[in-house]
Length: 391
Image (cartoon, rainbow, N blue to C red; front, side):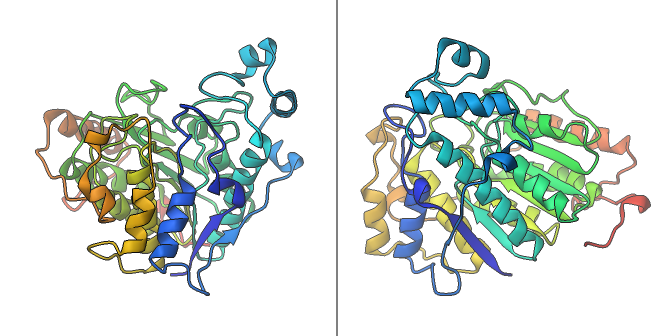
């Protein structure tokens, strides 16, 4: 399987500053770890992406909203009117130097990822995954919604059924809203219940959207069970010929903005399993606010996608990358020793709690009403009219 790592110079900088949750090294840390481990060879060196044009971005986002972003950046701050109308210049969505360029590059990277995926590769764009961005409003640290553009590009190229799967700890609301009435796209979001943006509840379902609100402290055993008994039946029933995944890293144990507790090896396995459902595969970054857990998770994911061997213990150069990091959101006493010595987290198995079983049962009941079978291995029977050959 051919794999491509997509990046840009702006992603090696934080962009955000101060005590903002995104004012931590993210993509830069992943690249430094991969370089230290020798995972960027001549045949799989990172691809530098270009910003999307204003005309391309206007395909989804409203022109007056884009005007407000550019106007606010030029003025080094949003007006009271733009702040109220577009949520630009708030504590959540601050104005900073290079804002427009960074957001446009994220979109350009998603479009490039989609083109590469259409050719049969798996394309990893860790600087992408701004899944909360709305058509005419910034939301959840997201100004432009690059997953939307990955999906649109795949559809433009002839893909007929695009499955969007969001493993981020926060509901993928912006992508869901963008394709709510498009029968070619299905959105499937796993996220912590009761967590911002407080949408995507168990009752929030539809023919082309599935929300799985996860209970706090979700362990590896529960995550695997939900994947096999709920996610995969839903995904296979849709019969996608392309998938777009927002990975996130905030569902991992130790992230300061969620209380989920899965390990990175289970997240890697889940992404690989979803990617195996279709021949065109785009993998985007998303959230994650602990630089150690995020850097290790995304570097390890690149290893899995590109066929690299993950060492049991990190070499000195990779350990030095992790030792150089800092984060005000993670207290020193909460920094696990494994974060500085390994890539793979220690397993976190646990009991299957009643609330997890109830979530799975509700999903099975909904799909049973749609005549989808649930064998024990979780492979759902596709209805005859949904069996298709991939383009």
